Image (cartoon, rainbow, N blue to C red; front, side, top):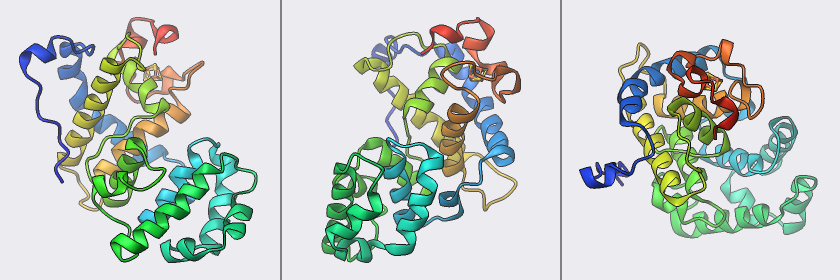
Amino acid sequence: MNRITKPKPAAARKKNPVNSVNLVFQTRPLVPALLHWFAQNARNLPWRRTRDPYAIWVSEIMLQQTQVKTVIPYWERWLRELPDIAALAAAPPEKIHKLWEGLGYYTRVRNMQKAAQQIVADHAGQFPRDFDAILALPGVGRYTAGAICSIAFNQPTPILDGNVIRVLTRVFGIASDPREKQTNAHLWQLAEELVVIAARRPCASRLTPRASHFNQSMMELGALICTPRNPQCEICPVKKLCVAHRENRIAELP
Ligand code: SF4
């Protein structure tokens, strides 16, 4: 399915909280700067060594409410005990509960087993590649579906979580509330435009999954450099493009 948003009519664009001058001058250099930075600085996390959508899905669900360092041993044990969709679909609930114990928010793990059973029933046990089919799984929202499609299948699907919101609002100088409906919609649109540019970009290595790496680079920048407090602007790869840095507005954005 083609999920590229059609361009909005001119009347709709007028209300866009993203300054169109910023957009034109920032989007294109932003993409290579982040891709380059990610290639040099990405953390060596275990779920980054696989393209298995099941393993990536498990990591995304675990990471929703839990820190990376806590998730690593849980994820490794889960993949040893329940290595694929079929194993999760057929596992006794007590075993799943035991593997999840300590992570909290148990609705997540119950939804994961329902989703695995749905994949067995509707997709012959193969993790679906289609965005809408992934979004239809229990416990999967727009962010998680976009993360799986881009990271596992290198599709240009946008992601927008707290880290990405922080990076985008600061870089583009978006002052309106990201929880407000219109601003949130424009942030999704901006995230989509950027990942599409990344996917289309020529690259020295054809093996580089650019949509995947671009989405992960924004999350990584938000996690490591563009942190909520005391962001490390001096070593930030996009500081020359960043409105918040240039105008000294970091404390107020987002
Ligand atoms: S320059 Fe600073 S505020 Fe701007 S994106 Fe980089 S770390 Fe964030």
